[in-house]
Length: 201
Image (cartoon, rainbow, N blue to C red; front, side, top):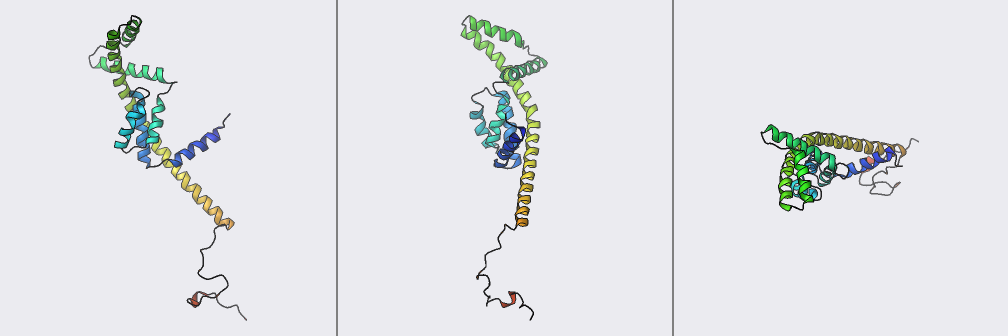
């Protein structure tokens, strides 16, 4: 079993190696969360790469953000986004009985009626897209600021670790003095004033 300490070290090392400013890294994460809620699995990264490049977002965190939709969360996440979209449409005066639409699509699939399936899927996709945008935009704000603050803290820890390591090396005398123009022990004729004073007689 992997200990939490090992996970923290792994996450810290991956965060340190990320290239880009904290804003770019956070921007990529926020974009990935939105894409994970709106775009179907399999094409999220294909759609996300040009958008991330256009918005100067980090590609790695964009890919990580899309993992908000994964085989464990597919059903509850997309069902929730469809419900949110249906509620929004009803508030706008559009009837969107999601449950009836899903049952109708299943019945048309059993009857092998392709036109009926496409018609029912069109209504479901409307709820999914609208609900996904609402949920994605609501989730991308905490994802952006959470990632930004996390990267800032990691950079602080990195600088502190480097400073502490340098201090330890100085204490142990591991830092070598700069190379001299003349071998040690030989006088420097060009700069006699810089030579140490002669020992007292």
